[in-house]
Length: 200
Image (tube, rainbow, N blue to C red):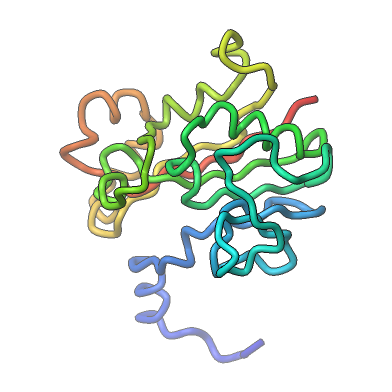
């Protein structure tokens, strides 16, 4: 570790300009990691599952075909970065992640927000999500759709730098309902990032 203080201009630049790596999903605790739809950027030390054999996947499987070739109660951390929008049946997808997760495991999700150009920029996207939609994965809200029990631990909206600079990100995250109802297309979000706890 350097004893030379980081120049103020460098500190300021780092706070103002967030690199793509800033928004990358990371485990929030110890234990075996499953990287779902890992592509060629599999999280180090994780077991990767992907539809393509031309990736870093350890397991090749179609995420639209159930069940997945994974054992029950195996993973403590599950990363789903830019995957949820590609699956045809999100509720079945979440139920399958619940099956392979250990009790108390954390499922980390990143998906484009419905106001984001990223949501409409890929013809393979099956669904578009709001923060409200992610919250419906909690069984307490929609028990007639889900047989699994999940709890939202954290849910935030990520924004591009210029919108962050004017304070919209802080307000939108504090008042997610009013933001999505009234202001989302005036001040578009980038992604939704969520952490859910698996209850068994």
